[in-house]
Image (cartoon, rainbow, N blue to C red):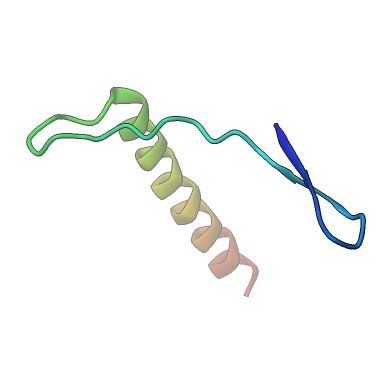
Length: 55
């Protein structure tokens, strides 16, 4: 972590950012991403069903 000091004596800390990964066109996304998307859609559907059941 890089820390710099301003004129007024305040310290600023800058986090190290991870390297960017460039995905080439045509590459498949990992299976975990697909399962995360499916899980999110199921969760939204369940929440809508519960809200409809309550009202």
